Amino acid sequence: MLLAGCQGPQSALDPAGPAAQAAAWLWWGMFAWFGLVLLLVVTLWLVALRRSPRQYDPEQARQVGRRWILAGGVLLPGLTILILLAFGIPLGLRMLPLPLDGPPPLRIEVTGHQWWWAVRYPETGVVTANQLILPVGRPVDVEVASADVIHAFWVPRLGGKLDMLPGRRATLRLQADRAGRYRGQCAEFCGAQHAHMALAVEALETPAFEAWQAARRTASPIAPEHAAAVEAFRPYCGECHRVAGVSDGRRAPDLSDVGARRSLGAGTLAREEGAMRRWLREHQRLKPHNGMPRHDHLPEASLDAIAAWLETLAP
Ligand code: CUA
Image (tube, rainbow, N blue to C red):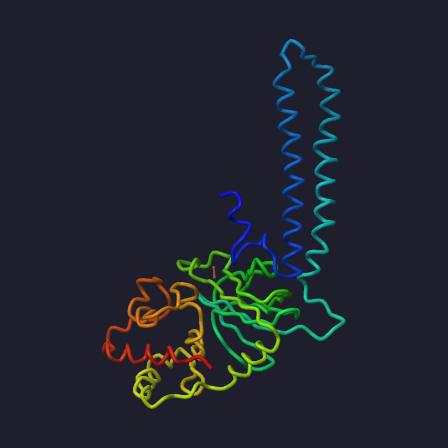
């Protein structure tokens, strides 16, 4: 159990980029240093227990006490703070969006909503939700904001954590040195479904990333058998959800590539056979109080048709 936190898609102790590496070093440094402090305090405590009250000399106690207060109350904390600063300042610099010598970092805008993530690539206009796709080996400046309450952006294996405050923009630099799938999670309690606010992160090699961006710039074609589903979707779901080429809603997650995502409801339901239908029918049971109304007034056949069509949205 003690070692369970050292691995996994969301472990800060298994870094996959320079900023996360610095955070991991800081963590291990603190662990070692505070381990030593604990050892010292326990040793002193055991020594004190062995002293008998008869050996107590008030005058000597006053003398020794002053020395210990100076050492334990001033020197040791001062040294601790200095060591933490020596570790912490370079770490903090790695997370700041400072100017770089090489090509400029990729910008990605991430906006927190109750309880999902809007993700936008300003250079290409590509929009997605609840997933962050980035290129390997290139610094990425994540510009965070919030549409409602305070959330926090955190992908532990790639970099530090940053609060997403309503009315304010802030930028965090991170980088993935290895292709792979990582997991982000809202790190600030933001309401009933805070736990169901996961971000699926994937780092792709540059050609694959460029191909992904290019594919997302074109709308999925609508096959004739899905025409009825699109007509049912547009006036109702389309008020809140955008689907490229179909609807332009802005209040809810963009669904233009929902058929290619790893989960539904920001990590609530894994994508598998039948998951989309289940989500459309039971979303208020699976993720209570989420912003989507129940669809009871829609005929089952209509819901199934919409689900089947959404599954195909994978440009
Ligand atoms: Cu958003 Cu917690």
